Amino acid sequence: MIKWETEKRVVVVEDDHVTRMMYRTFLEKAGYNVQLACDGEAGWQLIQESHPHVILLDVMLPKISGPELLKRLKAAPALSRIPVIVFTNALIPTALEAAKSAGADLVLDKSNIAPPMVLNALTGLLIEASKQKPQVTGS
Image (cartoon, rainbow, N blue to C red; front, side, top):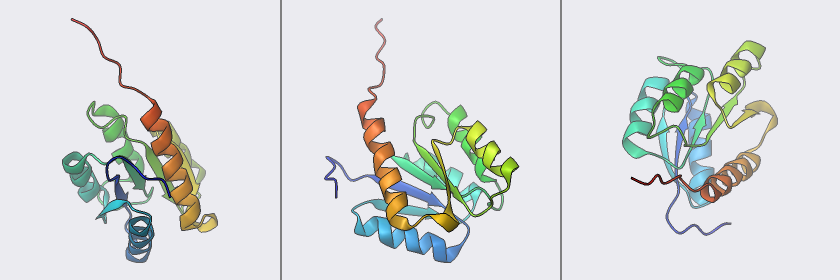
């Protein structure tokens, strides 16, 4: 397990209760601070309030779809650099393409991936994000 300088916050936006709780338990055991949202609208509010380090986002969500939420994130300067893993059982090519074109950093098939693999992907994205220094502009 990687030891971070500060506790890493993850927002999981997933409408399936069992899946939400499974990822919460697994990620908390791995040392992450996990916050949950059960639909796109609640996810958008939570992300704006908490500014997580990484987001796990389902594609098929009530109220605001995963791709629409992702578009909002990428359009918001304060949130646009947060890495987003889209994970879904909806293997509809148009939904997956919508997630990719909206700016997903990674798209995973929930039915073919176990929580440890999601954790590895999440950790990898956080490591990459920590290597990218924000650009400072002079006056």
